[in-house]
Length: 543
Image (cartoon, rainbow, N blue to C red; front, side, top):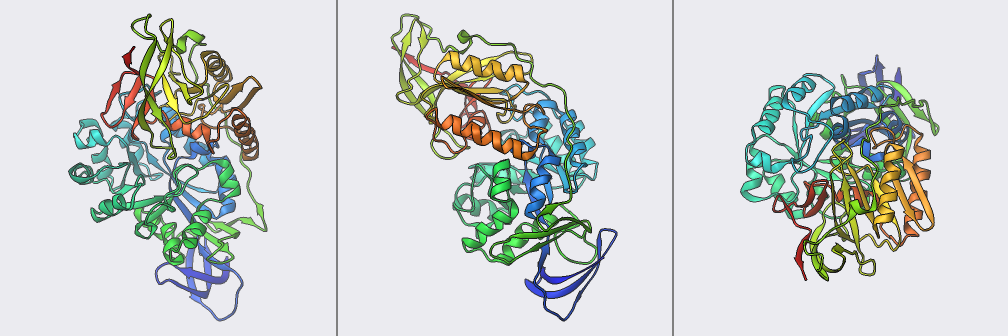
Protein backbone atom coordinates (compact mmCIF):
# COMPACT_ATOMS: atom_id res chain seq x y z
CA UNK A 1 0.00 0.00 0.00
CA UNK A 2 1.35 3.42 -0.98
CA UNK A 3 -0.02 6.71 0.31
CA UNK A 4 0.89 10.10 -1.14
CA UNK A 5 0.26 13.48 0.36
CA UNK A 6 1.68 16.34 2.40
CA UNK A 7 3.00 14.72 5.57
CA UNK A 8 3.68 16.42 8.88
CA UNK A 9 7.04 15.48 10.38
CA UNK A 10 6.85 15.67 14.19
CA UNK A 11 10.64 15.54 14.50
CA UNK A 12 11.48 18.54 12.30
CA UNK A 13 8.26 20.59 12.33
CA UNK A 14 8.04 20.34 8.55
CA UNK A 15 5.26 19.69 6.08
CA UNK A 16 6.34 18.33 2.70
CA UNK A 17 5.03 16.06 -0.09
CA UNK A 18 5.97 12.45 0.43
CA UNK A 19 5.22 8.88 -0.50
CA UNK A 20 4.56 6.51 2.40
CA UNK A 21 4.92 2.80 1.71
CA UNK A 22 3.07 0.48 4.09
CA UNK A 23 3.67 -3.25 4.45
CA UNK A 24 1.65 -5.44 6.85
CA UNK A 25 0.53 -2.44 8.85
CA UNK A 26 4.03 -1.00 9.34
CA UNK A 27 5.57 2.01 7.58
CA UNK A 28 8.29 0.57 5.36
CA UNK A 29 9.56 3.78 3.78
CA UNK A 30 8.92 7.52 3.65
CA UNK A 31 10.27 9.34 0.60
CA UNK A 32 9.99 13.01 -0.26
CA UNK A 33 8.49 13.47 -3.73
CA UNK A 34 7.61 16.28 -6.10
CA UNK A 35 4.03 17.24 -6.61
CA UNK A 36 1.10 19.07 -5.13
CA UNK A 37 -1.42 17.40 -2.86
CA UNK A 38 -4.57 18.61 -1.15
CA UNK A 39 -4.35 16.22 1.77
CA UNK A 40 -2.39 16.89 4.96
CA UNK A 41 -1.38 13.64 6.64
CA UNK A 42 -0.51 13.59 10.35
CA UNK A 43 0.20 10.73 12.77
CA UNK A 44 -2.87 9.18 14.37
CA UNK A 45 -4.07 10.99 17.49
CA UNK A 46 -3.48 9.37 20.89
CA UNK A 47 -5.50 10.01 24.04
CA UNK A 48 -3.07 8.75 26.64
CA UNK A 49 -5.20 9.09 29.76
CA UNK A 50 -8.88 8.29 29.61
CA UNK A 51 -11.53 6.40 31.54
CA UNK A 52 -13.73 4.93 28.81
CA UNK A 53 -16.45 4.19 31.36
CA UNK A 54 -17.13 7.92 31.81
CA UNK A 55 -18.53 8.07 28.28
CA UNK A 56 -21.08 5.44 29.38
CA UNK A 57 -20.03 3.51 26.27
CA UNK A 58 -18.23 0.19 26.11
CA UNK A 59 -14.80 0.31 24.43
CA UNK A 60 -16.18 -0.99 21.13
CA UNK A 61 -18.99 1.59 21.21
CA UNK A 62 -16.55 4.35 22.18
CA UNK A 63 -14.53 3.50 19.06
CA UNK A 64 -17.59 4.12 16.86
CA UNK A 65 -17.34 7.82 17.74
CA UNK A 66 -13.63 8.33 18.43
CA UNK A 67 -12.43 6.88 15.12
CA UNK A 68 -14.33 9.55 13.19
CA UNK A 69 -12.39 12.22 15.10
CA UNK A 70 -8.96 10.91 14.08
CA UNK A 71 -8.24 9.04 17.32
CA UNK A 72 -6.29 5.90 16.47
CA UNK A 73 -5.01 4.93 19.94
CA UNK A 74 -6.02 5.37 23.56
CA UNK A 75 -4.32 4.51 26.83
CA UNK A 76 -7.30 3.58 28.97
CA UNK A 77 -7.36 3.23 32.74
CA UNK A 78 -10.20 0.76 33.57
CA UNK A 79 -10.21 2.03 37.13
CA UNK A 80 -13.97 2.53 37.27
CA UNK A 81 -15.10 -0.96 36.30
CA UNK A 82 -12.23 -2.45 38.34
CA UNK A 83 -13.71 -0.89 41.47
CA UNK A 84 -17.00 -2.61 40.67
CA UNK A 85 -15.88 -5.99 39.30
CA UNK A 86 -12.13 -6.29 39.78
CA UNK A 87 -10.25 -8.56 37.36
CA UNK A 88 -13.49 -9.62 35.69
CA UNK A 89 -14.25 -6.00 34.84
CA UNK A 90 -10.79 -5.31 33.45
CA UNK A 91 -10.97 -8.42 31.29
CA UNK A 92 -14.37 -7.30 30.00
CA UNK A 93 -12.85 -4.01 28.83
CA UNK A 94 -9.97 -5.81 27.12
CA UNK A 95 -12.22 -8.33 25.37
CA UNK A 96 -14.66 -5.69 24.20
CA UNK A 97 -11.82 -3.46 22.95
CA UNK A 98 -10.61 -6.32 20.74
CA UNK A 99 -13.84 -6.00 18.79
CA UNK A 100 -12.80 -2.60 17.42
CA UNK A 101 -9.96 -1.42 15.14
CA UNK A 102 -9.05 1.35 17.59
CA UNK A 103 -5.70 0.62 19.26
CA UNK A 104 -6.45 0.06 22.92
CA UNK A 105 -3.63 0.06 25.47
CA UNK A 106 -4.33 -0.19 29.18
CA UNK A 107 -2.87 0.90 32.48
CA UNK A 108 -3.40 -1.32 35.52
CA UNK A 109 -5.55 0.42 38.14
CA UNK A 110 -3.31 1.06 41.13
CA UNK A 111 -5.92 2.13 43.68
CA UNK A 112 -8.78 -0.32 43.89
CA UNK A 113 -10.27 0.61 46.21
CA UNK A 114 -9.12 4.22 46.03
CA UNK A 115 -9.18 4.59 49.80
CA UNK A 116 -10.08 2.59 52.88
CA UNK A 117 -12.89 5.04 53.63
CA UNK A 118 -15.43 3.61 51.20
CA UNK A 119 -16.78 0.21 50.17
CA UNK A 120 -15.91 -1.00 46.69
CA UNK A 121 -16.76 -4.19 44.84
CA UNK A 122 -13.22 -5.50 44.49
CA UNK A 123 -9.56 -5.21 45.43
CA UNK A 124 -6.67 -5.12 42.98
CA UNK A 125 -3.60 -6.17 44.95
CA UNK A 126 0.08 -6.22 44.01
CA UNK A 127 -0.09 -9.85 42.84
CA UNK A 128 -2.78 -8.96 40.28
CA UNK A 129 -0.79 -5.87 39.27
CA UNK A 130 2.24 -8.09 38.60
CA UNK A 131 0.22 -10.43 36.43
CA UNK A 132 -1.22 -7.63 34.30
CA UNK A 133 1.97 -5.57 33.95
CA UNK A 134 3.79 -8.65 32.63
CA UNK A 135 1.49 -8.43 29.58
CA UNK A 136 2.32 -6.17 26.62
CA UNK A 137 -1.24 -4.84 26.50
CA UNK A 138 -0.66 -3.02 29.79
CA UNK A 139 1.72 -0.12 29.29
CA UNK A 140 1.81 1.55 32.72
CA UNK A 141 0.67 1.52 36.32
CA UNK A 142 -2.51 3.57 36.46
CA UNK A 143 -2.79 6.87 38.29
CA UNK A 144 -1.67 6.56 41.91
CA UNK A 145 -4.48 8.45 43.56
CA UNK A 146 -3.90 7.79 47.23
CA UNK A 147 -0.89 10.07 47.60
CA UNK A 148 -1.10 9.90 51.40
CA UNK A 149 -0.23 6.20 51.26
CA UNK A 150 2.67 6.95 48.91
CA UNK A 151 4.05 9.67 51.16
CA UNK A 152 3.67 7.40 54.19
CA UNK A 153 5.25 4.50 52.27
CA UNK A 154 2.34 2.10 52.67
CA UNK A 155 3.85 -1.35 51.90
CA UNK A 156 1.15 -2.42 49.43
CA UNK A 157 1.23 0.72 47.26
CA UNK A 158 5.03 0.69 47.33
CA UNK A 159 4.97 -2.95 46.18
CA UNK A 160 2.78 -1.94 43.22
CA UNK A 161 5.19 0.87 42.31
CA UNK A 162 8.15 -1.49 42.54
CA UNK A 163 6.42 -3.95 40.19
CA UNK A 164 6.01 -1.23 37.57
CA UNK A 165 9.71 -0.45 37.89
CA UNK A 166 10.52 -4.16 37.51
CA UNK A 167 8.79 -4.19 34.13
CA UNK A 168 10.23 -0.77 33.21
CA UNK A 169 6.77 0.69 32.75
CA UNK A 170 5.82 4.27 33.67
CA UNK A 171 3.80 5.15 36.76
CA UNK A 172 0.99 7.66 36.32
CA UNK A 173 0.24 10.20 39.02
CA UNK A 174 -2.77 11.94 40.52
CA UNK A 175 -1.79 14.58 43.04
CA UNK A 176 -4.14 17.59 43.11
CA UNK A 177 -2.65 20.58 44.95
CA UNK A 178 0.24 18.49 46.32
CA UNK A 179 3.23 20.74 46.89
CA UNK A 180 6.56 21.22 48.66
CA UNK A 181 8.24 18.38 50.51
CA UNK A 182 5.13 16.19 50.23
CA UNK A 183 5.25 16.48 46.45
CA UNK A 184 8.95 15.63 46.52
CA UNK A 185 8.24 12.47 48.52
CA UNK A 186 5.57 11.52 45.99
CA UNK A 187 7.79 12.06 42.93
CA UNK A 188 10.77 10.36 44.56
CA UNK A 189 8.99 7.02 44.26
CA UNK A 190 9.13 7.21 40.45
CA UNK A 191 5.68 8.62 39.67
CA UNK A 192 6.17 10.57 36.46
CA UNK A 193 2.93 12.25 35.28
CA UNK A 194 0.17 14.41 36.67
CA UNK A 195 -3.13 15.49 35.09
CA UNK A 196 -4.63 17.22 38.13
CA UNK A 197 -2.96 20.65 38.02
CA UNK A 198 -5.35 23.54 38.57
CA UNK A 199 -3.05 26.61 38.56
CA UNK A 200 -0.02 27.79 36.56
CA UNK A 201 2.02 27.69 39.77
CA UNK A 202 1.16 24.03 40.30
CA UNK A 203 2.11 23.24 36.71
CA UNK A 204 5.53 24.89 37.07
CA UNK A 205 6.35 23.33 40.44
CA UNK A 206 5.62 19.83 39.16
CA UNK A 207 7.32 20.42 35.82
CA UNK A 208 10.45 21.77 37.51
CA UNK A 209 10.49 18.59 39.59
CA UNK A 210 10.59 16.52 36.41
CA UNK A 211 6.98 15.44 36.07
CA UNK A 212 5.34 15.26 32.66
CA UNK A 213 2.32 17.51 32.74
CA UNK A 214 -0.85 16.20 31.17
CA UNK A 215 -3.12 19.05 30.16
CA UNK A 216 -6.68 17.83 30.64
CA UNK A 217 -9.38 18.88 28.22
CA UNK A 218 -12.36 16.68 28.99
CA UNK A 219 -16.07 17.19 29.21
CA UNK A 220 -16.00 18.04 32.89
CA UNK A 221 -12.66 19.72 33.46
CA UNK A 222 -11.05 22.09 30.97
CA UNK A 223 -7.45 22.96 31.81
CA UNK A 224 -6.40 24.36 28.44
CA UNK A 225 -8.47 27.45 29.24
CA UNK A 226 -7.15 27.95 32.73
CA UNK A 227 -3.39 27.92 32.70
CA UNK A 228 -0.16 27.68 30.76
CA UNK A 229 -0.77 25.00 28.16
CA UNK A 230 2.64 25.92 26.70
CA UNK A 231 4.21 24.17 29.68
CA UNK A 232 2.26 20.97 29.14
CA UNK A 233 3.77 17.84 27.65
CA UNK A 234 0.72 15.79 26.72
CA UNK A 235 -2.94 16.61 26.11
CA UNK A 236 -5.49 14.13 27.49
CA UNK A 237 -9.24 13.91 28.03
CA UNK A 238 -9.47 11.90 31.25
CA UNK A 239 -13.28 11.85 31.04
CA UNK A 240 -15.48 12.65 28.05
CA UNK A 241 -19.19 12.27 27.45
CA UNK A 242 -20.63 10.53 24.42
CA UNK A 243 -22.38 13.79 23.49
CA UNK A 244 -19.11 15.75 23.39
CA UNK A 245 -17.34 12.94 21.60
CA UNK A 246 -19.89 13.13 18.80
CA UNK A 247 -20.60 16.86 18.62
CA UNK A 248 -17.38 18.48 19.79
CA UNK A 249 -14.75 15.94 18.86
CA UNK A 250 -11.97 14.15 20.68
CA UNK A 251 -8.25 14.92 20.35
CA UNK A 252 -9.02 16.93 17.21
CA UNK A 253 -11.13 19.23 19.39
CA UNK A 254 -8.24 19.56 21.87
CA UNK A 255 -5.90 20.50 19.02
CA UNK A 256 -8.35 23.00 17.58
CA UNK A 257 -8.83 24.69 20.93
CA UNK A 258 -5.14 24.74 21.90
CA UNK A 259 -4.09 26.25 18.56
CA UNK A 260 -6.93 28.78 18.74
CA UNK A 261 -5.57 29.87 22.14
CA UNK A 262 -2.11 30.42 20.69
CA UNK A 263 -0.26 27.10 21.02
CA UNK A 264 2.12 26.35 18.17
CA UNK A 265 0.34 23.75 15.98
CA UNK A 266 3.44 21.57 15.61
CA UNK A 267 3.85 21.42 19.38
CA UNK A 268 0.15 20.71 19.77
CA UNK A 269 0.38 17.79 17.34
CA UNK A 270 3.36 16.36 19.23
CA UNK A 271 1.36 16.51 22.47
CA UNK A 272 -1.18 14.05 21.05
CA UNK A 273 1.17 11.90 18.95
CA UNK A 274 4.92 11.67 19.53
CA UNK A 275 5.03 12.67 23.20
CA UNK A 276 2.50 10.12 24.51
CA UNK A 277 3.89 7.42 22.20
CA UNK A 278 7.39 7.91 23.57
CA UNK A 279 6.24 8.09 27.18
CA UNK A 280 4.26 4.85 27.00
CA UNK A 281 6.66 3.14 24.58
CA UNK A 282 4.03 2.77 21.84
CA UNK A 283 5.30 1.91 18.38
CA UNK A 284 3.41 4.77 16.74
CA UNK A 285 3.13 8.56 17.07
CA UNK A 286 5.11 9.56 13.98
CA UNK A 287 5.12 8.99 10.24
CA UNK A 288 8.47 7.26 10.16
CA UNK A 289 10.03 3.95 9.20
CA UNK A 290 9.22 1.03 11.48
CA UNK A 291 6.22 2.67 13.15
CA UNK A 292 2.64 1.40 12.92
CA UNK A 293 0.84 2.95 9.97
CA UNK A 294 -1.68 5.06 11.91
CA UNK A 295 -2.41 8.04 9.68
CA UNK A 296 -5.02 10.79 9.79
CA UNK A 297 -5.92 13.01 6.84
CA UNK A 298 -7.00 16.48 7.97
CA UNK A 299 -7.90 19.71 6.18
CA UNK A 300 -5.44 22.05 7.93
CA UNK A 301 -3.72 22.92 11.22
CA UNK A 302 -6.49 25.26 12.29
CA UNK A 303 -9.72 23.31 12.01
CA UNK A 304 -8.34 19.77 12.22
CA UNK A 305 -11.34 18.37 10.40
CA UNK A 306 -10.82 14.66 9.73
CA UNK A 307 -11.33 13.33 6.22
CA UNK A 308 -9.78 9.87 6.40
CA UNK A 309 -8.33 7.52 9.04
CA UNK A 310 -5.93 4.62 8.54
CA UNK A 311 -5.05 2.28 11.42
CA UNK A 312 -2.33 -0.35 11.08
CA UNK A 313 -2.44 0.20 7.34
CA UNK A 314 -6.20 -0.34 7.05
CA UNK A 315 -8.66 2.36 5.98
CA UNK A 316 -11.18 2.71 8.81
CA UNK A 317 -12.93 5.97 7.97
CA UNK A 318 -13.33 7.85 4.71
CA UNK A 319 -15.89 10.03 2.96
CA UNK A 320 -17.72 10.45 6.28
CA UNK A 321 -18.32 6.70 6.47
CA UNK A 322 -17.05 4.48 9.28
CA UNK A 323 -16.11 1.01 8.06
CA UNK A 324 -16.83 -0.64 11.40
CA UNK A 325 -19.77 -1.45 13.67
CA UNK A 326 -19.66 -2.48 17.33
CA UNK A 327 -21.37 -5.47 18.94
CA UNK A 328 -20.70 -5.40 22.71
CA UNK A 329 -21.25 -8.39 24.98
CA UNK A 330 -23.55 -8.37 28.05
CA UNK A 331 -22.30 -8.77 31.60
CA UNK A 332 -23.75 -10.01 34.90
CA UNK A 333 -25.74 -7.79 37.28
CA UNK A 334 -23.64 -5.84 39.79
CA UNK A 335 -26.35 -4.12 41.88
CA UNK A 336 -27.10 -5.99 45.11
CA UNK A 337 -28.64 -3.37 47.40
CA UNK A 338 -31.93 -3.91 49.23
CA UNK A 339 -34.93 -1.73 48.45
CA UNK A 340 -35.04 1.40 50.65
CA UNK A 341 -37.70 3.15 52.71
CA UNK A 342 -37.92 6.92 53.37
CA UNK A 343 -36.66 6.61 56.95
CA UNK A 344 -33.33 5.27 55.62
CA UNK A 345 -32.48 8.80 54.48
CA UNK A 346 -33.02 10.59 57.80
CA UNK A 347 -30.31 12.73 59.41
CA UNK A 348 -31.19 12.53 63.10
CA UNK A 349 -30.18 14.63 66.07
CA UNK A 350 -29.08 13.02 69.32
CA UNK A 351 -31.63 15.08 71.21
CA UNK A 352 -35.13 14.65 69.69
CA UNK A 353 -36.15 17.94 71.34
CA UNK A 354 -33.63 19.98 69.35
CA UNK A 355 -35.22 22.74 67.24
CA UNK A 356 -32.27 23.50 64.95
CA UNK A 357 -28.91 22.06 63.95
CA UNK A 358 -25.70 23.47 62.54
CA UNK A 359 -24.65 21.00 59.82
CA UNK A 360 -21.58 20.56 57.62
CA UNK A 361 -22.49 20.98 53.96
CA UNK A 362 -20.76 19.89 50.75
CA UNK A 363 -20.62 23.11 48.75
CA UNK A 364 -20.43 22.80 44.99
CA UNK A 365 -19.66 26.03 43.15
CA UNK A 366 -18.02 25.74 39.72
CA UNK A 367 -15.28 23.14 39.52
CA UNK A 368 -16.99 19.73 39.07
CA UNK A 369 -14.17 17.99 40.92
CA UNK A 370 -13.32 20.26 43.84
CA UNK A 371 -15.97 20.99 46.47
CA UNK A 372 -15.78 23.21 49.52
CA UNK A 373 -16.87 22.75 53.10
CA UNK A 374 -19.47 25.11 54.50
CA UNK A 375 -22.09 25.05 57.24
CA UNK A 376 -25.80 25.79 57.42
CA UNK A 377 -28.42 26.20 60.12
CA UNK A 378 -31.36 23.87 59.46
CA UNK A 379 -34.63 23.21 61.24
CA UNK A 380 -35.26 19.97 63.12
CA UNK A 381 -38.64 18.23 63.26
CA UNK A 382 -39.11 15.35 65.73
CA UNK A 383 -35.38 14.72 65.81
CA UNK A 384 -34.95 14.75 62.01
CA UNK A 385 -32.94 17.52 60.32
CA UNK A 386 -34.90 19.09 57.46
CA UNK A 387 -33.24 20.33 54.24
CA UNK A 388 -33.85 23.89 53.05
CA UNK A 389 -34.90 23.87 49.40
CA UNK A 390 -35.29 27.65 49.55
CA UNK A 391 -31.59 28.03 50.42
CA UNK A 392 -30.55 25.21 48.07
CA UNK A 393 -29.48 22.94 50.94
CA UNK A 394 -30.57 19.51 49.71
CA UNK A 395 -30.18 15.98 51.01
CA UNK A 396 -27.39 13.77 49.65
CA UNK A 397 -26.98 10.06 50.37
CA UNK A 398 -24.49 7.39 49.39
CA UNK A 399 -25.82 3.81 49.45
CA UNK A 400 -23.58 0.75 49.20
CA UNK A 401 -24.51 -1.57 46.36
CA UNK A 402 -22.26 -4.53 47.18
CA UNK A 403 -24.51 -6.49 49.59
CA UNK A 404 -23.55 -4.62 52.79
CA UNK A 405 -26.40 -2.09 52.60
CA UNK A 406 -24.56 0.67 54.45
CA UNK A 407 -25.88 4.17 53.86
CA UNK A 408 -24.72 7.65 54.82
CA UNK A 409 -26.75 10.84 54.67
CA UNK A 410 -25.81 14.51 54.60
CA UNK A 411 -26.39 17.81 52.87
CA UNK A 412 -25.17 19.49 49.69
CA UNK A 413 -25.47 22.96 48.18
CA UNK A 414 -25.28 23.91 44.51
CA UNK A 415 -27.77 21.72 42.64
CA UNK A 416 -30.71 24.10 42.70
CA UNK A 417 -33.34 21.36 42.49
CA UNK A 418 -36.72 22.66 43.62
CA UNK A 419 -38.69 19.44 43.44
CA UNK A 420 -37.56 15.83 43.13
CA UNK A 421 -34.39 13.74 43.21
CA UNK A 422 -31.66 12.48 40.90
CA UNK A 423 -29.71 9.28 41.49
CA UNK A 424 -26.89 7.38 39.82
CA UNK A 425 -24.85 4.19 40.04
CA UNK A 426 -21.92 6.18 38.64
CA UNK A 427 -20.18 7.68 41.67
CA UNK A 428 -16.41 7.84 41.73
CA UNK A 429 -14.57 5.79 42.63
CA UNK A 430 -16.39 2.86 44.20
CA UNK A 431 -19.59 3.53 42.26
CA UNK A 432 -22.08 3.02 45.00
CA UNK A 433 -25.52 4.56 44.52
CA UNK A 434 -25.56 8.31 45.07
CA UNK A 435 -28.66 10.46 45.26
CA UNK A 436 -29.54 14.13 45.78
CA UNK A 437 -33.08 15.23 46.49
CA UNK A 438 -35.47 17.64 48.09
CA UNK A 439 -37.05 15.01 50.37
CA UNK A 440 -36.85 11.39 51.47
CA UNK A 441 -39.79 10.17 49.38
CA UNK A 442 -38.30 11.25 46.07
CA UNK A 443 -34.88 9.93 47.08
CA UNK A 444 -36.38 6.54 47.97
CA UNK A 445 -38.17 6.29 44.64
CA UNK A 446 -35.02 7.20 42.71
CA UNK A 447 -32.75 4.73 44.52
CA UNK A 448 -35.24 1.87 44.30
CA UNK A 449 -35.67 2.54 40.60
CA UNK A 450 -31.93 2.05 40.04
CA UNK A 451 -31.82 -1.11 42.15
CA UNK A 452 -34.70 -2.59 40.15
CA UNK A 453 -33.16 -1.63 36.78
CA UNK A 454 -29.67 -2.93 37.68
CA UNK A 455 -27.95 0.42 37.34
CA UNK A 456 -28.12 3.72 35.52
CA UNK A 457 -29.22 7.31 35.95
CA UNK A 458 -32.67 8.53 36.94
CA UNK A 459 -34.48 11.78 37.72
CA UNK A 460 -37.85 11.81 39.50
CA UNK A 461 -40.12 14.78 40.22
CA UNK A 462 -43.82 15.61 40.39
CA UNK A 463 -43.69 15.70 36.58
CA UNK A 464 -42.76 12.03 36.28
CA UNK A 465 -39.34 10.54 35.64
CA UNK A 466 -36.52 10.25 33.09
CA UNK A 467 -33.99 7.42 32.96
CA UNK A 468 -30.90 5.96 31.31
CA UNK A 469 -30.18 2.31 32.04
CA UNK A 470 -26.53 1.22 32.36
CA UNK A 471 -26.50 -2.58 32.59
CA UNK A 472 -22.73 -2.93 32.06
CA UNK A 473 -21.50 -2.72 35.69
CA UNK A 474 -23.92 0.15 36.32
CA UNK A 475 -21.47 2.31 34.36
CA UNK A 476 -21.98 1.68 30.66
CA UNK A 477 -24.61 0.77 28.11
CA UNK A 478 -24.38 -1.74 25.29
CA UNK A 479 -26.71 0.41 23.19
CA UNK A 480 -25.52 2.62 20.33
CA UNK A 481 -23.90 5.97 21.19
CA UNK A 482 -26.78 7.79 19.57
CA UNK A 483 -29.30 6.15 21.92
CA UNK A 484 -27.16 7.14 24.91
CA UNK A 485 -26.84 10.71 23.71
CA UNK A 486 -30.58 11.01 23.10
CA UNK A 487 -31.42 9.66 26.57
CA UNK A 488 -28.79 11.89 28.20
CA UNK A 489 -30.14 14.99 26.49
CA UNK A 490 -33.68 14.20 27.64
CA UNK A 491 -32.44 13.56 31.20
CA UNK A 492 -30.61 16.89 31.36
CA UNK A 493 -33.65 18.72 29.98
CA UNK A 494 -35.87 17.00 32.55
CA UNK A 495 -33.51 17.95 35.39
CA UNK A 496 -33.35 21.55 34.20
CA UNK A 497 -37.13 21.69 34.57
CA UNK A 498 -36.60 20.57 38.18
CA UNK A 499 -34.70 23.85 38.77
CA UNK A 500 -31.15 22.58 38.28
CA UNK A 501 -29.00 24.72 35.95
CA UNK A 502 -25.84 22.63 36.11
CA UNK A 503 -24.47 21.78 32.69
CA UNK A 504 -23.61 18.20 33.74
CA UNK A 505 -25.61 17.41 36.89
CA UNK A 506 -24.84 13.69 36.95
CA UNK A 507 -21.13 14.23 36.58
CA UNK A 508 -21.17 16.74 39.45
CA UNK A 509 -23.14 14.19 41.47
CA UNK A 510 -20.68 11.41 40.68
CA UNK A 511 -17.69 13.46 41.85
CA UNK A 512 -19.42 14.30 45.14
CA UNK A 513 -18.28 10.83 46.22
CA UNK A 514 -14.66 11.15 45.04
CA UNK A 515 -12.64 10.94 48.26
CA UNK A 516 -9.27 11.75 46.69
CA UNK A 517 -10.22 15.26 45.51
CA UNK A 518 -10.67 18.08 48.07
CA UNK A 519 -12.53 19.17 50.04
CA UNK A 520 -15.69 17.56 51.41
CA UNK A 521 -17.21 14.36 49.95
CA UNK A 522 -19.84 11.75 50.75
CA UNK A 523 -18.80 8.12 51.15
CA UNK A 524 -21.18 5.26 51.89
CA UNK A 525 -19.42 5.19 55.26
CA UNK A 526 -19.90 8.85 56.12
CA UNK A 527 -19.09 12.50 55.42
CA UNK A 528 -15.40 12.70 54.54
CA UNK A 529 -13.06 15.67 54.93
CA UNK A 530 -10.36 15.09 52.29
CA UNK A 531 -8.01 17.74 53.68
CA UNK A 532 -8.06 16.16 57.13
CA UNK A 533 -8.21 12.63 55.65
CA UNK A 534 -10.95 11.60 58.08
CA UNK A 535 -14.69 11.39 58.57
CA UNK A 536 -16.46 14.30 60.22
CA UNK A 537 -19.91 14.60 61.81
CA UNK A 538 -22.75 15.87 59.66
CA UNK A 539 -24.20 17.68 62.67
CA UNK A 540 -21.78 20.08 64.31
CA UNK A 541 -24.15 21.49 66.90
CA UNK A 542 -27.71 21.00 68.08
CA UNK A 543 -29.75 23.97 69.24
